[in-house]
Length: 238
View (cartoon, rainbow, N blue to C red):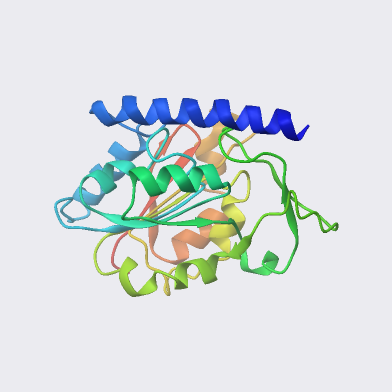
C-alpha cells in the first residue's frame, strides 16, 4: 500500500510540475471557473487598484497555478498565506510562489481545533484530500490542524493594510470556518468559498437563506457573484 501511495504521489507531482510549466506561459484565468477574474473585477468596482499590493489567505490552495483563485494576484505582486496538506504541495509553492507563506495544515473552525484528524491521501495523488476526524493516534496518516482564528492571527499585521481576499476550499468545511470567523477582527475585502447545494437550479435561493449568508451580511458583506459552486462576497464600509 505504501509503495502504491508513493507511485501515485510521484505521478501526481509530475503532472503538477507539467501543469505549472504550461500555466507559466499562458495568460488566462487560473481558477476553475474564472473566479480570479470576477474577484479582480469586484475589487476594482469597490475602488481598489490591482496595481497596489494586496494580500490573501488561500485555504485549500492545492496548486500554485492550476485551479488557483490567488495566483493572478501573486503574479501582479501581491502575496499572502496559502494552506494545504502535503509536503509535495509545499515544495511546489516554495518553488513557484516563494513570497507566499505555505502552512502545511488542515484549517478547521475554532471549536474543532482540539480534535484529532487523519487524511487518506498526500500531495498530488488526488485533487481532493479527504480529511476526517479520528479517535486513533495514527502518526502515518495524521495531519496538522489549525483553527481559523489562530491562522489569521499569523498574518494580521500585514493582511489588512490594503485590499485582502479570503478564499476557502476546505472540502465541505467552508461554511463552518466562515461562521467561526469574526470579520470585524479580520476584515477581508472579498470572501470566496464553495457550497454545493442539493438542487443547483435553486442555489441562489438556497444561498440567501442559510446561516453562513446571515453571518456575512451581519458583518457588512454583500453576495455579488456565484461562479459554479463558488460564492463571492464583497465587504463595503459598514
